[in-house]
Length: 120
Image (spheres, rainbow, N blue to C red):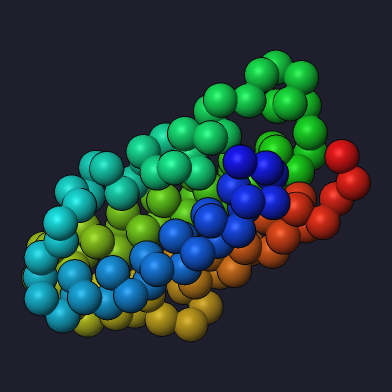
């Protein structure tokens, strides 16, 4: 897959997490454990990022996306942990506008789009 293909797939996959987290808040259940959601190397995009060689890791776009991707997963894990602990109101606040999850998700999407638009 090309860089653009990977980024487009990642944007879509990460975009679905808000819905999955809303479902977890509503039901108190998740098919993915908190520890797997909280780490950035379990999803396809994270595995792809880990596959970069030393030269590829020098890119500022790579570094920015890695940092935001890690923060995205940490925030998603935090929301899921609250949902599974039955802390519905806290989980809803953690998923609301201007929350760490929403802000990081937006910033990650923008960074991935910037990377995709950058000339190789």
